[in-house]
Image 1 (cartoon, rainbow, N blue to C red):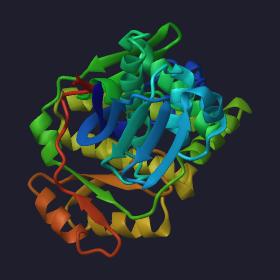
Image 2: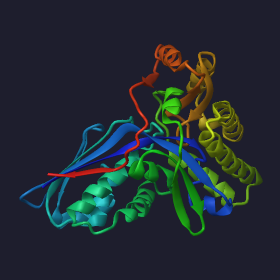
Image 3: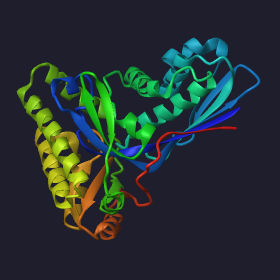
Image 4: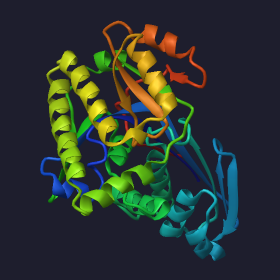
Length: 336
């Protein structure tokens, strides 16, 4: 049997950080807004006739091997730790080769690891006979990723991976709800440029500092998170109403606010890229993920996306992601 799965990565637009438990429980009305993009994470499982388990990452050039009789060793495996822990959790009873690949660079801030997480869970779940319904994939993904990064992980990335599209994710005491947004996809796509700065980031460290400070009663962090919540509410409304001028204004102010609280959300190199972009057709920057490296999405002046991409492509170390589309499709599963 061959199982192939894929899921889309994402660009987060508003509400990031407040999707981490228990932060959203402290700020009523918490939500995030993001959209899935056509850069995918892939997982392929091919069953074997022996008890070997071989896992290989094509983009990271890493590989490990174990056996069904030695599954317990995967609990502490450090090579490709995420798929190792997932295999340990599912405890399959047949040998297999697993091949994984992400189309975004490691540390890009585009939810590559969370997206791969969903793709692997879907494949492994099918391998073990559909043990869990699909609505369980996201809680499992968050729990296992928390074990890997050893701090709480946000939830928004799993929803873009599983469902695709442009969505607001609402966080409430009675659960998390995904709202598909009725947005002018073509206009949004034509006004967003995405660049990889060449500097990977560590989201776990940045976000965990915020969580700790909020739990400790830090008043500055309280105001920051209230602002993130309010910004996301306003941004969702502006998107739905197709008020593109307001979309740009909200993104720009949100960037300044985060930068005021956390200087390390950008590196000196990222600041140079942002300043250059704002002088070449960009209206506002959105540092993807928790920042400190990775990708930046720029909201462009109308009709200036191509100009901005051309200008940014000449900067040293910067890679323009020019061939992406908004992905309206989420998780894909095929069996052969």
